[in-house]
Length: 152
Image 1: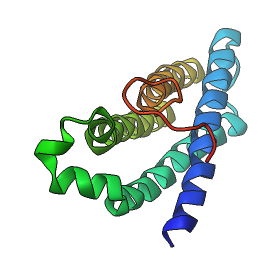
Image 2: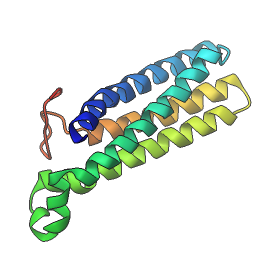
Image 3: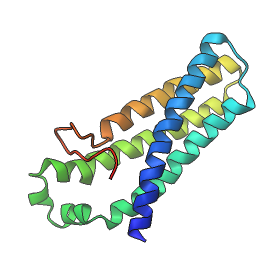
């Protein structure tokens, strides 16, 4: 089960990044062009938040089952000396949860705005902030805190 979840985690994480990027581009274009907020725009907003929530659920399950995380919490004093353990034990999960909360708030606020321009602007700002936080929380191959390959 763990390996199956890891596969879906790898797939969905890229769907989250791609859908956020797509929604940001769509909302920026819609705001600049004063376009009507179409059903397709609403679907982009909705599916971006849905992918983020699915990723959150899979991520929490994997977090709770991870040997790195189990080591981190059982050997907290020792683990706090290792930047990779701190990154995965605390920083990564806190930033990712924060990003998903921001996506959720942005989606809800955008849906409730009165004008199309406000919908696009709200979606753009909140989703861009969330994507920025996600980029900070990704263990990039070049990261000094923790690094992983792009694809495993």
